[in-house]
Image (tube, rainbow, N blue to C red; front, side, top):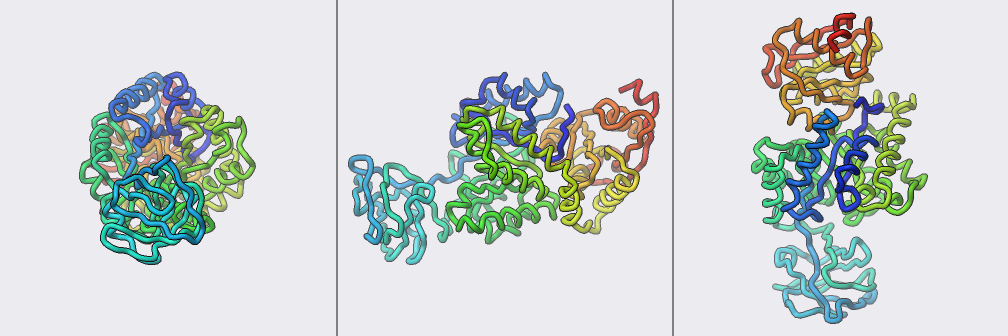
Length: 478
């Protein structure tokens, strides 16, 4: 199935979209990647969910990426007598290690690591920003705060700490078990929540051992402060704007989104823009104009993918949400302004053979007005370097490894195909032309660029670019 856009779409699966027929409809509407949120799916059902996606993949004969999103450390207050209390602006409110039910003066904070890390002046945000406290005094096992924004506080509400670096890893014991289950089920990407430091990503990669690529979710100010180091070790990035907008001033989030997007593009690593993109479509069949503009902005910026969360997981119009996002991306990419923005943000090739070949392929495609760059790749690195250049031509990634094709389903402008590796240069060119015709990227008399590495099957050995012309024989074999 040939997409009429280069930007990819990630759709989260949930109660509204767990039926196989709905998942298939989501793919037909434009979803390239399915996200499984381990905050809501029982671990025991993960392999079943992935198996459903794989059956649909086999039926449709197109690689589909599965992104397993780890929950991360969920910080919450304890319980209240009467299940809730009301705290007033300006009053003192204590967070402590006493498990007794709380009231309007105090509550249990069942996270000793937080109580030991809080310092005077640190903000404590509760219930997604509805309540805001500032620490005034700390002592062993307790922190006294002043209520800046009060209101109703109830059992087990979430806690965010924008000023505090918590001395715990981003991966909890639940995450470790979920990660092992995800790898066993055949996940292609693992998303790490609440990353604070590069070590959080390295820990997950050490467990994954290359069985899946690891994506760092940037949703904490600490991650923004360490962004360059995190981007250096992650395989991909996600701009998780929901929690990011809770833990830092909302007006700073758009700038952070652009910084992450451009930084990931510079490194040639996929970047996903996520959270509340078509939020109103959870309950309405059409989005707001502002939401359409939000999605379009991410596409204009050259993000690899845009993501739907509750819109496709629990909303009333999951297929319509994907279809709407698909139409927005298609329209943006038809706009001449889009290509002028993409061209203005292209990065200088690095001094490697792979980047030299990618730059040459991009220039040739532009000069000759070609539609397809046929990239033979085992690990996916050749396709990633080509996509980094954001060529006008579609990157058709030909790979003998199904897991590579699935991972590349997330990457901008890449159309992955699973096929046997080439046996020699003539076979490489012939089958590249054949697939260009089969996938409707070229016709008889058209030319395509073929990029590969010699010797064949050697990861990271991209060193060859060739122009091939599609003939009647290629079309007959397609």
